Image (cartoon, rainbow, N blue to C red; front, side, top):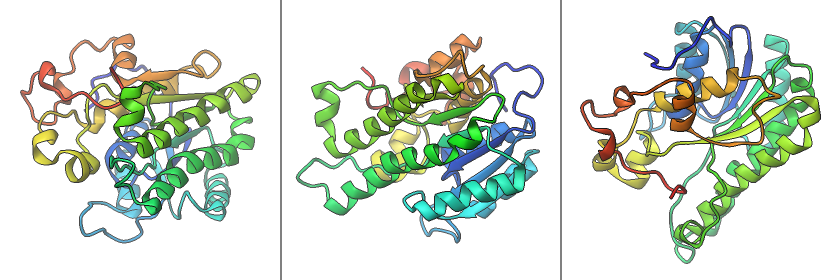
Length: 284
């Protein structure tokens, strides 16, 4: 259940095209929008179940429908321009247009530069940076026609200090690249009224990446749920696009501005105090 304030259903009938979204943060954002009656098209690779990860693009679509939205699962790869073109065409064919693009798909590898496989470096660049740019660009003609168009990328502020550039250079380049692409689009299409912003949390979020890649059960216990990200994204996506663009937003700051004062309900392990939450990377 959301703890963020809202009036009416501002995303009712709006169409979201999202990369990924089979699980985790992307699915949480989709479900929050679905409760308003939004249309959600998911471009994701997960046609069949993964042995270590729950959910497919099809189960996500079922959950979106159950939450009150309309769903279009599209099996494809954000690295493939043909998949992106197909996703845009199918979304427009199904729902009549595109109001929102959410760049959710992302690959994480925190290896040092000498340990990072070239193949993984390329994968992070292709999904995180290239995918964000190409999916957003492909949707621009539709976004120009939307009443309140938004691009939202799940990436951090450009905190390009030695601490964060050097911590995991390959991953830092990929996430900062997502942000630079988004800020560039915000500037390029400002006159068209297309908002483009990024959103990043102050604490780790209880996702498969945290469980399997970063910190296991110990870190999951001091993380917040994906719903905090979803509630913040909801506030961004309902804002007037000409008034909120070109910003690198922080989840908690967005919610505080919306009137949320108590984050305790977002603890992955109920009862964990706010001060015990583990800080996410890229923020000082």
